[in-house]
Length: 104
Picture (tube, rainbow, N blue to C red):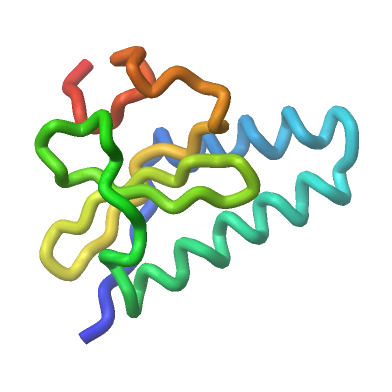
């Protein structure tokens, strides 16, 4: 049974921010990075547990794919994969503002 991939608003905003940031130097490369991130999340429909567990999440519920230097963080809830955040690898994941598994 395939899972459905859904994007949280925060993840959509993160992806838009990444697109805008990269586009300052190259709209072509920005399009490529965004497409690769979106394509990687589509694989989660068939393989929802393919990403590694985020080490900073003590609950072990949040997983991630690393695509083009971006951490695509997600959680599997029954038959839905929720994309929670898309953060550049330079972001501090120890900062609670960058931790989708913590209530803010």
